[in-house]
Image 1 (tube, rainbow, N blue to C red):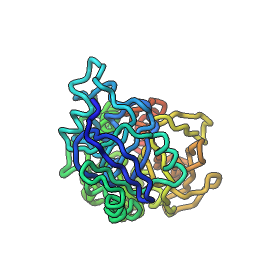
Image 2: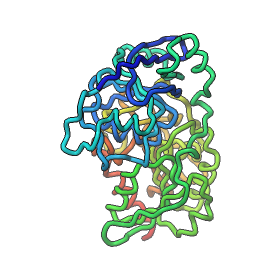
Image 3: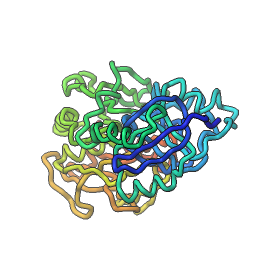
Length: 375
């Protein structure tokens, strides 16, 4: 239920909102972003891509389904803070083991509720994502603002190393093993290797600092780079490893952060979006088929590549394969060698946890690409 403890939210431009504590009491800081998903908050909060971000829920009523032990996408909640308008007073789902607020308290996640999240979201859309603080300890807007402005910006932040796995682990193939995949964990969600394993892939999840030689020691049929947090412009090591993968001709599939690193490896630049794409209802068009997919997103950076031109790279011919219909942001890249698909990436989350299943075919495409390469 709603706490009676007051809480204060202050943005770096000085805008402030006074509400009630939601979750753990204390103080937290990060980048304020908004997510437009109507459901799936458990998957959102446990997505490592949200590390150092304070998430604002645009859906007004949050917590209806409580918290269960099956839908976590990692081992912990990664968001720096959570902002909602109306918390559910009690969970209403047969799968719930406890309430959302109980889980936030257990994991020490500071949040705020009973504020005008619509006004806050409109402010972020107009001014852009920005640094923010939430506190139940310091209710002086000027004092909290000083602390907010002192934290580092997301641009220039190298965060993947904070969320990556400590040591490699294997997700076995479901049924007969067809392929071996080296998956570089830059902030991977649990459902991603699960989706690959269901297609006969034995997935070796590797730390972000893995070397090309360590990848090759697995004799992989394909290489995968996951989603993750931070500025792709700082990911020089993963990019250099990926360039070696592409030069070796190994099939590659990347999502989200892995798409941005792929873009950099091909010679494109990346840039910070004004407020990013976050939620499970983003329309994306496949330029090859003309099909529109509703997709799950969480990215604040994007690749700067021409939408209507093939680009010659050291590894083959690259082109944009998908675009967001809201703003024409690049949402996918393809690399072809001798007219055959050699590598591809998408800027969204095809594992659909939570989210629509329109993009699940991309895992089949990865399998088909590895099969063709093997042949």
